Image 1 (tube, rainbow, N blue to C red):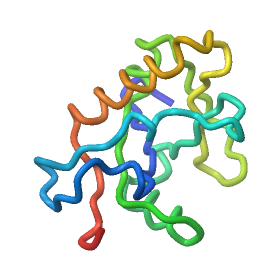
Image 2 (image 1 turned 90 degrees about the vertical axis):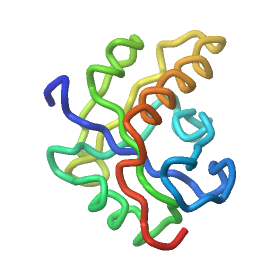
Image 3 (image 1 turned 180 degrees about the horizontal axis):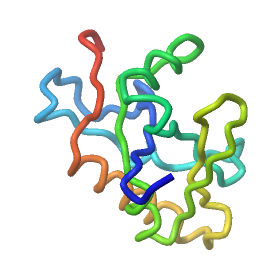
Length: 130
């Protein structure tokens, strides 16, 4: 992956703050980028070299709910001292952002910083219906 490669993350519907349809007022919670205990510090994302933002949404929503897609770059992760790893497991194009080495008091701060990068870029895919 290159520094400019985007990493797509799906937005769980409960992580939407406000239900506006316009992407100009669409706001996400930093929980979108916060790994849960089951993630074991590895936040799942899609590699843009293999899935566009829309394709990642379509792939994900075959089994799970999503309100849309947001994206951060490999470089933005690196700038936050987070490693992006392409492991292609459980599917080709799967990656993760590694929060595993961070002290617990830094995880939420890094999630907030990734959210800021994603929101600066804007929603990369928003389905017609939320």
